Image (cartoon, rainbow, N blue to C red; front, side, top):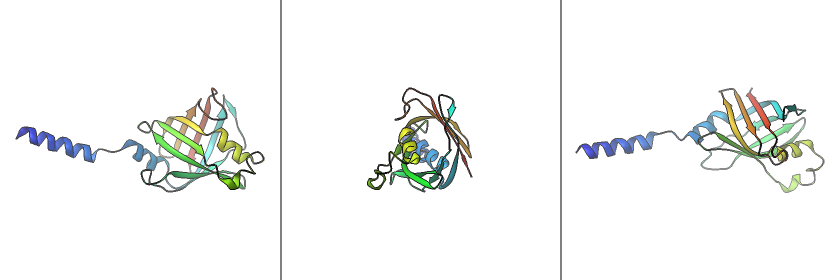
Length: 150
C-alpha cells in the first residue's frame, strides 16, 4: 500500500512539474515590442540598434517568430529556448521575397550575422541579456545582445 501511495505521489509530481523551456519562453517572449539596448561584437557597439516585435506563440504548437526592425525595414527570425532555458537561439527566416534585399538591406544582414546560439546571461522580467561566440556572422567573437521590454 505504501508503494502504491509513493508511486501515485511521484506520478502527480511529474504531471504538475513545470517545463522550464515553455515557462521561460512565455516569460521572455510576451508578445510586443522589445528594444535592443545593446548589440555588440567583442565590446564594439553596433549601430543603429534594432527593436524586436515578438509574435505571440505556443512553443509546442508552432515555430515562434519575431520581426527584427531597423528604421523602417524589418526582417523575420525564429527564436527558441533550449537546455532548460539556458540557451536561446535566433535564426533568420529566409523568405524568397527578401532574397533581393539580402545584400543591400542592413536589417537582413543583421538578422543573418546575429543568428546563432546564445547563453542566457541575465533573465529578469523586463531585461534579458544573451551572449554568444557561435553566430553566423561573428564566429569566435563575443556577441552580446541586451533587450528591454517597453
